[in-house]
Amino acid sequence: MREIRISIAAIVLFLISFGVIMIYSSSGVYALRELGNGSFFLNRHLLFLCMGTVLMLLTMSFDYRILRKYAKPLLIFTLVLLVLVLIPVIGHASFGARRWFKIGPFSFQPSELAKITMMIYVADFLARKQGKVHSFIESFVPLMMILGVFCLLIVKQPDLGSSVLIASIVFIMMFIAGTRVSHLGSIFLLTLPALYFLVVRVPYRWRRIVAFIDPWQDPQGVGFQLSQSQIALGSGGMYGVGLGKSMQKLFYLPAAHTDFILSIIGEELGLLGTLAVVLLFIGLIFQGARIIKRVQDPFGYFLSTGIVSMIGLQAVVNIGVSIGAFPTKGLPLPFISYGGSALMFNMIAIGLLLNISRVEDL
Image 1 (spheres, helix red, strand yellow):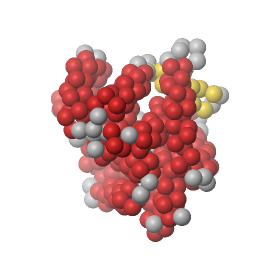
Image 2 (tube, rainbow, N blue to C red; image 1 turned 90 degrees about the vertical axis):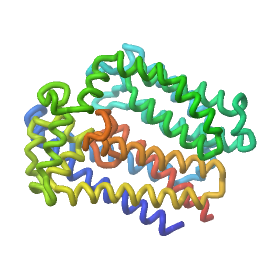
Image 3 (tube, rainbow, N blue to C red; image 1 turned 120 degrees about the vertical axis):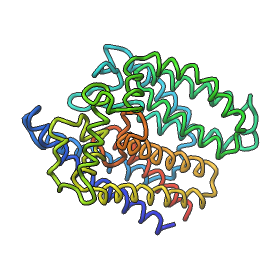
Image 4 (cartoon, rainbow, N blue to C red; image 1 turned 180 degrees about the horizontal axis):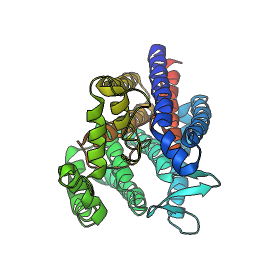
């Protein structure tokens, strides 16, 4: 699988390099005006990138199967962090959300760690319960209890999107393992009242749904972000207005260097630049699927399935939000958007995927 590893490494390198360029392009003016340093976000992103590279290399340096021994301790450690981040004197709050630990100029989001540790635990659990995955009591209920606790703590931050993402990854892994569809469907139906309460009964989330349905009904209010994103994508045409020449990044489009960086790519590099990004992600998912198909170890099989699902779902949701196919949700575009914790843990995930492929070749 050496050629697959090389292709995955090349695709990720392209995405990261593209992200570095676009982060500087989309954030330079904003950073200069608000922070007095046009390269503020670029410098921080490069620092996170260096840290992520070290962590990715470390992740690739050992036999990934060792993680099975630490699956439960890692899960408990992450659970403790998710509890601690909710405590006012410990967790850092920003824009009404308490999701970060702040250490000097750096911040750490434990929900990003939760994606990795949950995948490791679920992969180990499914590998141990291979003959019992159809069992409601022995397999389904224990996983749902653990998943429920994690999701409740993350929703409490509040961060509904990350909890839905983690639940989706776990459901995909369980479905691949052979969990009964009736079990998965029943838990989905049982969560619908909670989703109704969390979306419809929470004003800011409901406004996002209204804006998603028709952002142009109130383009200066609830539909402002989506309408500005669509203006950016439409302004780029086929070839774009030129790298660095975006108008929407000039304080029109919020989160231009994070959640809506694809819109700036579409404006500056046009449809061709946007399609290039989409094709890179398709290539990454395809090559990841090739690894999954060839893995013989059950733990590696389920873990690689979770990793590819995580990267793919994040990319699909971010792209869908940018073009108006999904309601607004703060999930960054993997390897391209600015974001310390997300970038580092996505790189760790890729390191694990390459590690699984390497060990299979031994």
